[in-house]
Image 1: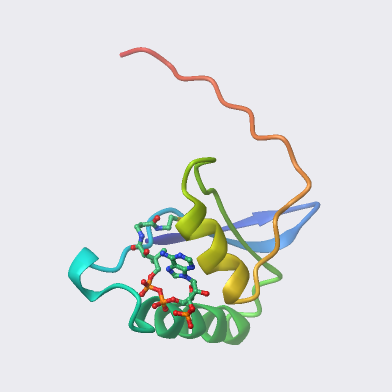
Image 2: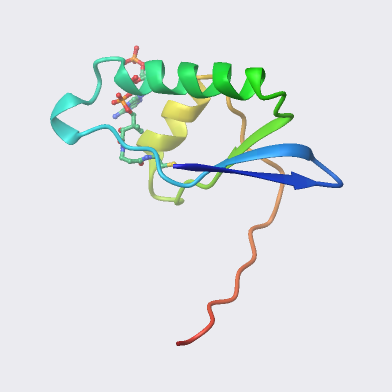
Length: 84
Ligand SMILES: CC(C)(COP(=O)(O)OP(=O)(O)OC[C@H]1O[C@@H](n2cnc3c(N)ncnc32)[C@H](O)[C@@H]1OP(=O)(O)O)[C@@H](O)C(=O)NCCC(=O)NCCS
């Protein structure tokens, strides 16, 4: 699940919110193929930047995204939860 937004600073941004491979299908190159498809589709859409968050403890995801060419961003992540 990814959403497109535009930003004065970053240009056309695609933010990946959810990216999963079923546990019993992992480590067979499926994630790499999905990421390749995502990147190609973003290139077709003239996206300037793909962004996503990875939890600190999720080393697998961090290694995965590095392995498909993404680099860690030099940014702080801030948020405020609003109660309902
Ligand atoms: C991250 C995830 C999508 C990877 O999917 P996958 O299909 O297993 O990944 P691939 O088999 O294509 O692996 C590609 C490369 O990523 C790296 N990688 C993947 N899993 C890894 C692991 N457990 N440990 C270290 N490196 C790993 C490797 O470099 C791997 O290449 P290699 O197998 O030739 O060594 C999958 O583990 C997942 O669904 N995790 C849970 C959800 C999640 O964390 N999503 C990302 C949050 S944004």
